[in-house]
Image 1 (cartoon, rainbow, N blue to C red):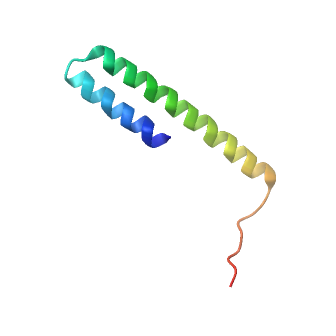
Image 2 (cartoon, rainbow, N blue to C red):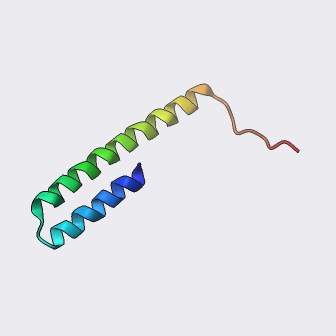
Length: 61
């Protein structure tokens, strides 16, 4: 998801350079939404992982 946010961010920059303001604003908005969704999911998974309390697994030989 973070990759898609970066892709939309690059599209927004390129569109802004070429003067397509509407497309740049839309791509920037999508990138912002995707970034915050990624951040929320990351924090939720971090909290759930810490709450479970399982340590790292040891490799089986």
